[in-house]
Amino acid sequence: MKVAFLGLGAIGAPMAAHFSKSHELVVWNRTPERLREFAALHACTAASTPKEAVKGADAVLTCLPASAQVEEILQGDNGMMAGFSPGGILIDCTSGDPDTSRRIAQRLAEVDVAFADSPVSGGVRAAEAGTLTVMVGADARTYERAVPVLQCFASKIEHMGPVGAGHAIKSVNNALFASSVITFAEGMVGLVKDGINAHQAVDVLNNSSGRSRFSEVLVPAQVLSGKFAPSFRLTLMEKDVSIALDFLKQQGVVPLVLQRTGEALRELHNALGDNADFLEIVKYFERQVGVEIRG
Ligand code: NDP
Image (cartoon, rainbow, N blue to C red; front, side, top):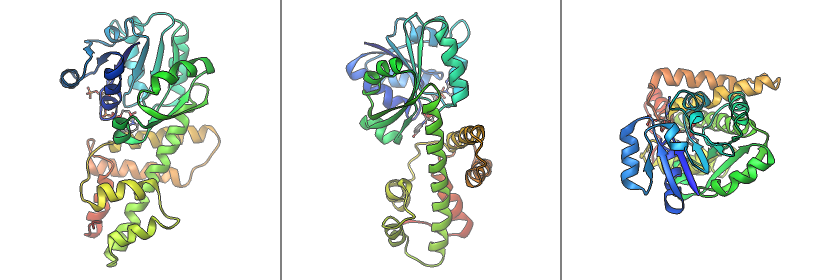
């Protein structure tokens, strides 16, 4: 199978790398240095435009910051629309938004190209290991076509409903995750400031009802260890919460806590800058009271 992968960012690159081992792979990335870097390490062809990348591909995957960028690379003389053939499929692994995806799907349907929103969860480590979770929004036939492609980097693939459903659950998942990161940081710096041992506190929380995936997996590996390896930009987290808030409001929900989570992320983004990793949230609260959560 000939696979095209567009967007070789922090998570896109390790996802794309899996196809280089088992399929004919064509890649495209906006910044050419990143494209060259990837092509030097993996068996693939580097395309110079989205149009060139998707030409003749049996499956096309995108992994960009948001749906707006997916829509952007669809259009223009060198866009994906100019390269698609009838019968093609676009599997969008961006954590995007349901409304834009429905618009994209409709546009693609007019030229007989199928669309599946297929955002992923599990982070860069799971992308490297090929054990991502994928939440798919598509019609049943498109879902069936997407599964063998997604299996190259995922160990759990769920059909959530029609186009948009994958993005809806992904945004809610990330809003819950964002809340757990912020509340963990706030609570823990208070405990450490009071003189409680950080390692012991995390251990107790992880055996109690306040635990989360963040406290169980990422805190020991990245925070207590002091590693803070960047993997997921704070601005992407902020974007996900904003998508979740729009989605929830459309359902008639008046979010109290998640609304505040969105505002808090905006404040943190302003304080920490555009390039901050989400783990910087922990350091922000550490600085606030002059302690470190290590041990
Ligand atoms: P990065 O910021 O690392 O990479 C973004 C990618 O999108 C790069 O390839 C970048 O190209 C490209 N890009 C940005 N703007 C444009 C544009 N206007 N036109 C074309 N290409 C563009 O993001 P991630 O790889 O971390 O995330 C990608 C998606 O996956 C996001 O939706 C994110 O929310 C989601 N995600 C990320 C996870 C993670 O752990 N990192 C986990 C789960 C989901 P360039 O090299 O030119 O900047």
